[in-house]
Length: 436
Image (cartoon, one colour):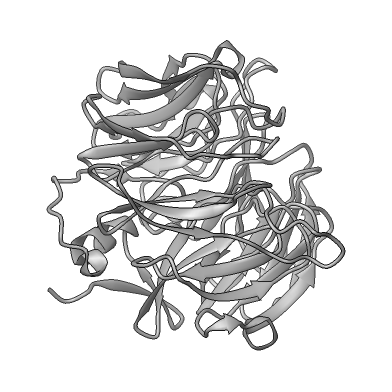
């Protein structure tokens, strides 16, 4: 079967991400998939870049646009993962002592099933993070969730039947976990960045059996520490005929062979929390982090330490970033955690075009459709931006909600509707007559 790929200015990205990875198996065996229907199969969507190709999605909304809402147990920040009528989420209860995977049915507008993945002592975490921030990933048959220390990786059938679970060992990350699992071939890829024994691993998608495990160590000037906490999610790309699994981190952006786990290349960066996920576009990889306030563009490919040869450009930011960048047309946009400082840059050169302070805090990564970028802040207000040489705010859409209802999950756009998850509710937004 010939590969079907999407071109991003010379960088080939697996269209549908896990879908083609499963189909071609990377030599690990092909897997047949169930009929999809509408899908947003995991973190940042089917193209792993926050983009939807749908044309009938809303650009303006308010509380009057809410088609339905479902109360969720406990609290969580995982973004909605959707396959057909099923919406998969995670949540934590009893201040982290109980963590659950759940499924909301889009037709009945109710929780279809809920399973406890972990009960026990609550590990340390950051107040912004909690214990249920990693998004689920699904292939339409099985669904996978990650809970960090104690919880590990869990696999269920989409009807809620438990299949397997795998502990992750040492997880010394005092601010909790948020790296989402990714499906590649017959493997579940999980990043486990922590202050001790950091690694990236592949597990057999059907059994949970370890396939490979690669330590992640960075020698950072001025410290003896080599392992560091992080929260990004791997992104699968294909460049020059080679598949690369690209991961942001505390002191480097690295690429791995998804079949073996071998590190292919690394670009060293300044020390900074590896929170945002790398975003591909225009033959480049765009990366920032949670402390050094620099946006970088990296040329993929090469071998070993390619810092001096593959760093295309870098430009300073005004504040540290938690949300991932998004590429829309010829522009890359990124918003800061504190104060909502939104920057727009030329994607190929890195030239800063403008900065605009949106105000308040932003944790959710942006999404895009119809040439627009959508930035959701923690208060439930979405800024609709038209990228270009000047800042253009097309709309400001606010979901009025109690102060304790915080929006840190990213928007999931699907079938004419938008799914917004707060700490305790799932909202479905869209015009009457649109899909569920």
